[in-house]
Image (cartoon, rainbow, N blue to C red; front, side):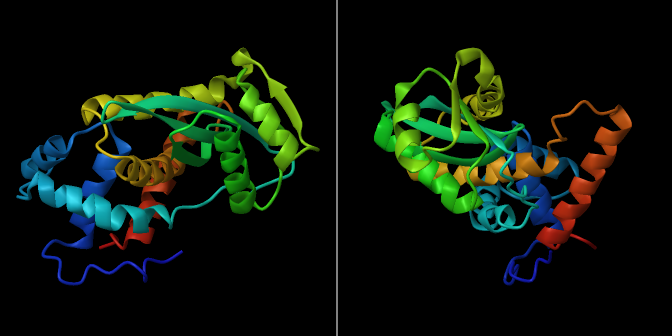
Length: 233
C-alpha cells in the first residue's frame, strides 16, 4: 500500500502534522478545538478551522487506504439501525458489522423495507459475496428485504443476538455529543466513512487476546497508518 495518490502540495504543514491531526480527530472523541490545543502543546500553531478542512480533504483519501477485511461465505453479518437527529428531523443510520468490523453504513430518512434493501444491495456490491447468515433485531423490514435480495441466506431475528452491531453505535454516540450533533446528512455520511475506516484499522480482533497481542496490533496499525498517509519521516 502506498500514499502516492495523496498530495500535500501547497500545504504549509508537513504530512506528519496533518495526518496526526486527522488521526487524533477521527480516532478519539475529541472536538476540533481540543485537537488544536493538543497540537499547540507540541508547539504547532494551527486553527481548529484548518484542522476541520484537513479532515474533510484528507480524511476521505486516508479512508480508502487502510486494510480491508477479506469477505468470506462463512461471514455472519450483524445489521442494525440507529436514529440520529439532524436539524430537528429523524434520520436512520443503517450499519452492517462482522465481528465488530464495520462493513458498510448508510444514512437514510426511512426505516422500512426499501431502506433495508438498499443496505443489503450496497453490501453485496461492496463485498462481492453473500454471507452465511445475517442477524438483525425484530424489525420486519430486514426479512422482507432479505427475501428479495438474498433469499438463500439464513436469517436470525433476535434482539439479544445483535449486540455486536448495537455496540458499534456507542463510539459514534460519544462523537455526536462531543460535536453537539451533525449539521447535515452529507456531513454525517462523510464523517462516518472516515470514522469507521480508522476505527476498523485500530480495532483488535474480536477474539480474546492477551494485552501484548493487543499492543502489537496497535503498533502495526500505527505503522500502517503512517505508510498510507505518507507520514513516515
